[in-house]
Image (cartoon, rainbow, N blue to C red; front, side):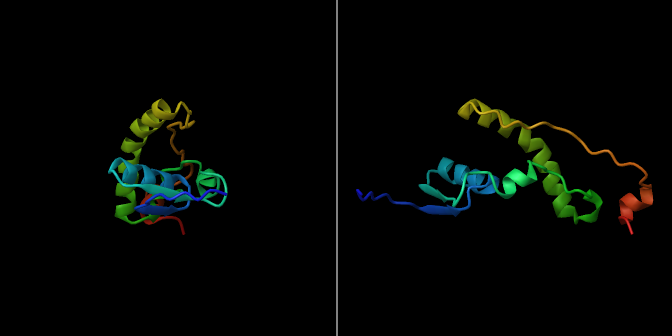
Length: 113
């Protein structure tokens, strides 16, 4: 087997959604990146999470989580469009919402229980 030598400046362990997006940011900044994944890319927890951007019970999380969710809701659509254009692969992302039934305002503020 031939030996190949290549200088790598950053190693990302895990080829899930966060690992690949981190590698993309680093590569765009001009760094040489290697992504290590033991299985198939985006198949483990990324596959199970299905691209969910919001916590299941949003009022049970601290404000920084809510702030990150709000940012993600605005950042995701352009990212999806860019990735579709660059790769020709449809990310199959659909913006949707969450319907809550039988929840009072007090429960939404204080949380269930």
